[in-house]
Image 1 (spheres, rainbow, N blue to C red):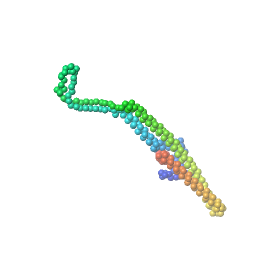
Image 2 (cartoon, rainbow, N blue to C red):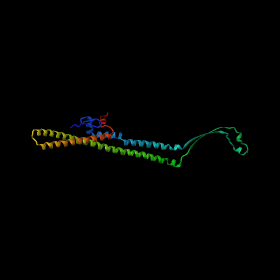
Image 3 (cartoon, one colour):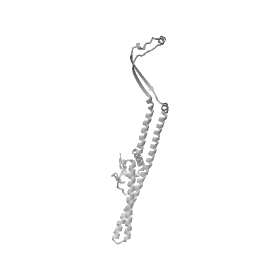
Image 4 (cartoon, helix red, strand yellow):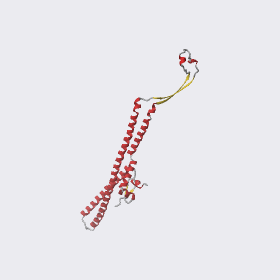
Length: 239
């Protein structure tokens, strides 16, 4: 039985294609590819990476916060400078600042001022933020594990839905053959009306079952594509 359908992405799906045969018959190779692709396109993982990067930048900022207490000061004034020796101190009226020549004076200084709680709590603050990074990394691992479980389940749904649809198509073909035989025999007067009606009802049920199986297969297929963030055709045929 050959399944040929059109997905919502406008792609033809046929098990006779090499990529689709590999997709359904080589789960040990396909599942890692599906999982890896899903993780790459996952919004949860992207959010975790952004949170981790922000936390790492926050740690760097915290490590250099102590430098905020440093201050570089400069000053300038114009006037006299008096230098008094010990001998001059013992001789009153030996120093007259007003008689000294005036000149420009420059001052340069480096100061440090930081509250004690911030100075001694800096290490704890950095440790807290490093813990946040570890927490985000753990959350990412949990998210990856959940993605793996979800992708495996979705893949199995697609495989099972395909099997069911194949069986329904086989049943529909058989019902169609029986319907045509019944119509011929009825026209030839070999069977009664109630027998032909029963055959038609069987055929109608086969059509309904086939459409239901097709719908479930398409749904499972598209849900898997939605989770991995790309089309299965492109993924399986990419070099």
